[in-house]
Length: 310
Image (cartoon, rainbow, N blue to C red; front, side, top):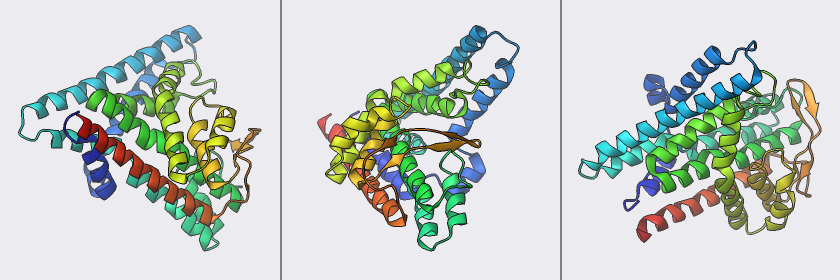
């Protein structure tokens, strides 16, 4: 990618994000994928179908998403190639696939609410970014949940999309976003989705293999520590990928993350990641955000270096 598409997309997204007025008028591109997934799930994920059939239809859904996202990205690049400075159009099309600004703005209110002692507001704020039950979380639990989400979303929302933009251009970025959206919506282990969402979950695991490990490395570099915790504890996470940035964040901040988690009222006994303090608070979230900003800065250097090398 000779032009600085990735660097420009990062800079634009950090500066303006996906403005609320634009979202109100046209929504978000990921919403298109969500509607396709919902339509396929409603039509094909019938509990009366045999499990192998539902798994096959889930694979067809993933294939449709690959074709839709890849074709859209390819068409934009084709049009851009005919325009003077068409790379700017590609950068603008890549912008909504990144989430630096959005992630920061969703995590910061959790720290602000905890700092003023408003646990109810903190629970509400963290509920926007995590899937677990938040109604009974104490203040350290809220803080840990926010930091864990920050670490995992650093990979899913920034590193992985940028990685696939650099590797596969705009089609690569939007294919990743389509599959990641499918994983978040149907890639679950509950009986309703286990067979139909299998292909989405496994494809998402595959696409995140390299970005997750890169995310962990970047967080350790940005924090100048955390390597030992990352290597030791990354495998403790149920996901083959999410443990890397989470363990790196735990080590860099000298915290314990993960541990027992409640989903839909059921407590799941999960191992702790890290061997630091478990009593995280507002200041730890702020430290996590500062670490996140530095790690994003390293991504800017990588994107700029790739453009310069070409």
